[in-house]
Image (cartoon, rainbow, N blue to C red; front, side, top):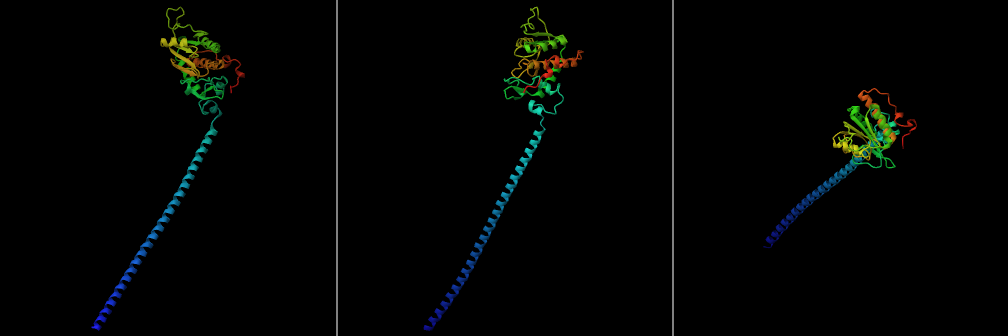
Amino acid sequence: MAENKESTLEEIKEKAEEVIEKVEDTAKKIVKKIEKIVDGKKKTKKIAVKKKTNIVKEEKTNSKKSAFEILKEKAKALEGKVKDAEKIDIKERVTGMPSDEENTLVPIEDYLKSSMHLGTRVITPHMRKYIYKRRADGLAVFNTGLLDKMMREGIDYLAGFAPEDIVVICKRESGWKVAKKFADTFGMKLFTKKYPAGTLTNINLDDFFERELVLICDPWLDKNALSDANRIKTKVMSVCDSNNYTFGIDKFVIGNNKSGKSLGMVFYLFTKLYAEKRNIKIEEPRIEDFIDDWENLVPPK
């Protein structure tokens, strides 16, 4: 009996040791697997960190490159503007007229000398688009390119009427002499000082007459003639300054209509080019006949 017990105990002991060994082996295997998993995660994390670092570095490099490229492009653009600025002619800066503009009716300096390009301190909404800038003293400066262009168009319009179909009105004293010279050259009817209201509209008046075109020097001063012409639907052409409105005017040229020198330039061009367009043989007009002391004039600053 005693021997049987001892053998049983021995068997149990052996089996227990086998189980313990197996458990230890299994535990070791599990530990190794866990270590492999942990090492794998660490490696994966390191790789991810490296990738992220590389991406950040690339982004920084790219941003530096793009910033450099942007600065380079801006520098090129500024260089182009500087080159363009160097090409701007002094006449363009003063008058708004490009230096490569086609030949003008008279040299640009003549427009400037006659102060035809100078307006008033008042600029109406009708005339704003023809103004290039304001001077330091507040006077408007007409765009000389537009001034010349509109003078060409105005003369073409004027040449569409025969001399006997035009009446010239100029109430402004500074324009009396040149308006008379223009009208007398072609035998046109003329009113200076005062236009008798109703002369164009009232058939009962002794001095009533009809014309197809009324040429006025200032829509404000010559408003009676403008009003009569509009009442009977007669065409009106005018010289318009920066302070004028163009209501009721069919065709106008822009420019200073206050100065005798400026109106002298206007009527000199009207006389010279109207004769050419209508093929009327007259003695070649001289600018000195329309503007006193022309040779000694200097452009106003």
